[in-house]
Every structure is written in C-alpha cells, then in structure tokens.
Length: 159
Image (tube, rainbow, N blue to C red; front, side, top):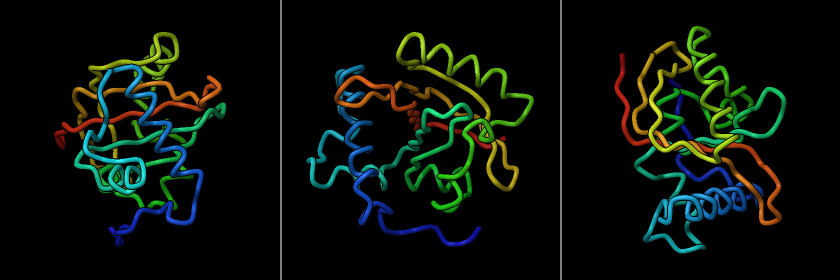
C-alpha cells in the first residue's frame, strides 16, 4: 500500500469541514452523544480524521460515491484519499454481499439509522473483513435536506 495522507485532507477544503460538522450534529441528534466528546468545533474535523474508529460517508447520487473517509477507514480499505472519494460505495462490498448492503441502506433511509449492523467488506487489495456493531445514519443539512449516509464502526475482524 502506498503512503496515506498524514494530514487532514480538508485543510484547504471547506466542504469537508462542514461535512464533518454535519456528521457530528446528526449523530448527536440521533444518539444523544457526541462522536468525539472532548473535541471542540475548531479541531473536530482534524480529530475525526485521526479518530480510533472507522468513519465513512457517501453522497446522494443514483450510485452513491464515497465523499469522506477518516484515516482508520482508509487504512482498513487500503485506499488513498483521492481514490476513495471517487469509489462507488457499493464496491466496498463484494458482489455476493451487495444485495445485503442495499437492504441495509434502504432500512437506514426509512428509519434514519441502524445502530448494530454487521457485514463483510472488502479492501482494495481483496482483503475481506467483518465489521461489527456499526452505526449507519442518514445525513441532513441544516435545512433538513438529505445529504447521504454515514457509517462508523470500531470493531472488525479480517477473514
């Protein structure tokens, strides 16, 4: 695997700082707790990128594409930042697991979140891993407009 970015990739990208705030705000609304309780608003995006759990999100396209991954997720999926944010999120699961993934995302769309998801994902180099106790939720902006979905998890096992 080539080297991963060691600095938060949004240093010059306001979208990502705003996106991290959206991820935080909706998570707090849905679950009544903060993703990073000790982080203030000024350093939240940087701390989220370097958090000990994996966090990803995708956009609202017909074939949603990842638009965020923190460092832990980039390491697990074995992607560089620039590659990952061009990847259709369905490709994070093997074809045999994509129907199950689609059912998950439909349930999240309907309910707003799922808080105990388990599923197999695949890295860029073909390594399979089981994620456990994942939280997946819908993202909405300050006006309530749907902005995609996010997922975080801190338990995984390589298969």
